[in-house]
Structure formats: structure tokens, C-alpha cells
Length: 422
Ligand code: HAM
Image 1 (cartoon, protein in one colour):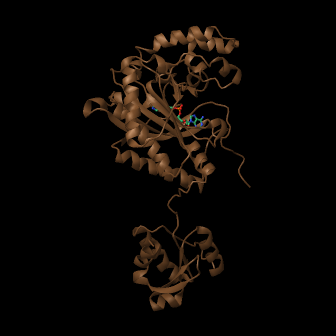
Image 2: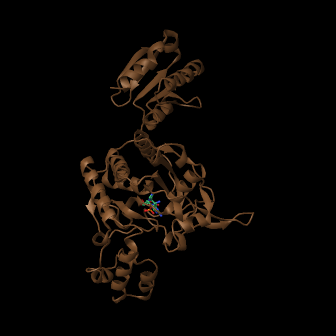
Image 3: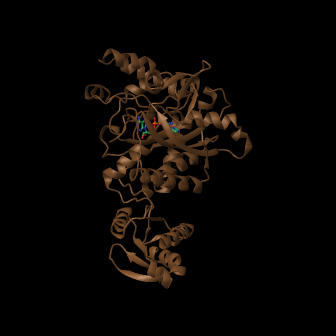
């Protein structure tokens, strides 16, 4: 019987074997980040509510509708992080990382984020992101580097159908004029009350409206791409050249708008065609004004957040081959107390040699213990009886073929290590 409790609604949790996959893809990312010189951060899960109000923006759904905000015992308003970028920048500034070494400061972090959304497949109230940020450089090479890290990670997992949708949202010089022009166009359309209200608060979001009746009317809407200032256009062209040099494919998507207010210039999303409504598996972009928005110095930045939950769904949807390292490669079965004691030491020795090893506990009989061996997923079983012990050997059985041979106890670890590497 299960207990009377269940996890709260909409919380994404992982237990084995899926949790092994979750951990393994995160490890694969850690390696990519390390190879590109990004350091790891471990950050607060909750923050001063104003950090997100000012950082992510009051007009966004994330801030206006989806935050888990609470008052602590000292009457302070705190919020469970709905995303990482504002926190990363807060931590970089607070610790003065931008004053310590060469810019950009290159960092990454991971963990749960929280949004009070209506739960459905691929959309959760507690979900997980990999977040990587490069702070303090305007160089388009940094844009291309970060995008290539994300694309490289998806590729390393064996995903083949990920699309990169790319746009530029301009800067504080060119966007206001474009915004006004777009508002003027939108005000002339036949739209419902809520959408009309959005024109005044966040007109770019209207471009993102998926309803066919709205999309039809947007056919001639002015696009940011046609209104970029010379500097933004040069930046965008350069990013695309660099991506082409790196062999990263993308689709120019002039209507791409993201749900957070801080974006400037390079803006993108990774999309997976097999995931239906929640197809955004990652997203990112530049946020050249965010540092000033939260009271810091002028410090341009760029980064991304990749959804771990949706990446796992994408792996499952594609039937991709990526497999976590096995938790058990060798399973020990002992017959009798003396043999069990020796086996216990042998399992420890195997682990020290880097072999994932486990054994039957509770003094099980041969039949039950061999069943455990099969269920463990191990490639080999070591069977140790009292007679073997007297002869100084163990029986090593390959579980797939059933092939069995006696191996000297002194050599078991090295023999198994060698046979596992074949
Ligand atoms: P975001 O697009 O809001 O961007 O989230 C990034 C990714 O997190 C999404 O593409 C999606 O895969 C995943 N995600 C978001 N909400 C949910 C949810 N409710 N359930 C499951 N997965 C979800 C950001 O958060 C930015 N901070 C990314 C960034 C970093 N931009 C610059 N630096």
C-alpha cells in the first residue's frame, strides 16, 4: 500500500530508471560547460520578490500570474525562483565576479524552478532547467558560443530533430520606435478586449498569439528584423555567420518573441516537433540592460535555459539512444556465511576499481539471488560458494550467454574490468 500522501500537483519528480537518465544528461551538460570554460554556481532557490519584478518584468505572465510568492516570518516578500537569469546576475554582482577576472564571467547552474502554471504533459509547477550565462561582453562570438553549447548538448544526447529558431529583438535604441509602429498597426485590427490591452503593455507578445483569427490579421505586421538599427543588424549578421562557421543550423524566425522582458538583440528558442503544445525545450538570448534594471553597472549578457523535463520527453519521443551509465555491471551471489563475508569485500574492491557492483543481501538462497542478479541489469554475476572459497576462485557468469568460468579470487576485479571494457 502507498502512504496517504502524494507529491503536490504539477510537481515533476524523477525516480529510477528515469532519474538515472535525468542525472546522466545533466552530467553530460556539466562536461560541455566545463570544456567551454564555464564555472558552476549553486544558488538560492528563493529570492527577494523585487528581483524578479524588476528583472523578469511586471508585464510578463511569469511575474504577473505565475510566481510562488510568500511572506517569511520576518515579513519579507520572497519568491521561489521562476527562472535563473535574474538570480545568476544578482549572484555575479553580489560576489563581484565581474571585477575579478577577464570578462565575460562564464557560469552555469541547474536545479528546480517554479511557476504556478496549469499542469499538463511537459508543463509543470516545479520543473528543472540547465542555465548557462556569459556576463560582461557584447561580442557576437559569445552569442554563437553559448548557442553552440546548447546545440552540442542536444546533439550529444542523440537528439536529431531539435530546431533552433533565431531572431533579434533589437536594442534600447531601435526597439522603442519599432514598438510604437507595431502598436499603431495592432490598434487598427479587430481584436478582443484582452488582446487590445496587451497591445498597450507588451505589443510584441501579440505577434506570438497562436490563434488563427489573430495570425491572419498579422500577415502584414511590421517586423523587428526590418527595423534594426545598424549596430543591431551588424551584430545579428555576425552571429549568423559565426553559427554557420560552427555548423549550427538555425531558422530565421522574425516573429519569435519570448515570454520574459529582459531580452535584447539575439533571441532564440529550441523547439522539438514531437512534443505538441509544449514544444519549447530551451530558450535564451541577450539581456544587455538587465544588470542596470536590477541596480548594477552596465554589463551586457547572454545565456540560455534548457528544460530538462522536456528534453527527457524529447529523448523518449525520438527513441534516442542516449543511455546513462549502468548502476550495476556485476552482481555478487554468495552461498554460505564465510563466502558472503569474502564477497562483501570483493564487491567493495570492484567498486574501488571503478566497476558498478552490487550483491544479494539477506542471506538469500541461490535461486532467489540469481533472480536478483538478472533483475539488476548486470552483465556478469560472481558466484562464490564455500568450495570455491577453499579453491581460491569465484565463478564468473556472463548473464546474457550463461557462459561461466572459474577465476582466481585475486584476479576477479581486473578480469571483470577487462571483460566489461570489451
Ligand atoms: P524560458 O523560455 O522561460 O527561459 O524557460 C526555458 C525553458 O524552461 C523552456 O524552453 C522550457 O523547456 C522550460 N520550461 C519553462 N517553463 C516550464 C514549465 N512550466 N514546465 C516545464 N518546463 C518549463 C528562461 O527561463 C530564461 N531564464 C532563459 C535564459 C537564460 N535566457 C537568458 N538566459
